[in-house]
Length: 114
Image (cartoon, rainbow, N blue to C red):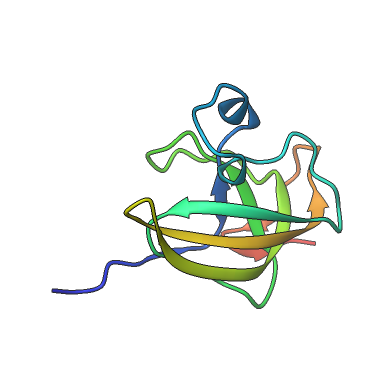
């Protein structure tokens, strides 16, 4: 038996409307208003591994690997794995470096384009 872990080059969270409709927890969603320099909590199901030594894209997910273009550049500052309500989860914190409101390309894969 092996250990199942997923490597994520981005942080993919749900739309804030999913929280407002009681479909997801607050930490599973992108906050309604992202603020540069502010730190936010996140929650993902499964054991996920993130790059911690630089910026990664924050994307919106609709599930099933369907991701938006990056909404922001973030740095993950904390990650922990735990069992919550009988399910393996990944909890952590991320800090917003920049919020994107234009249509420009800000990442090439996981690499930040400046």
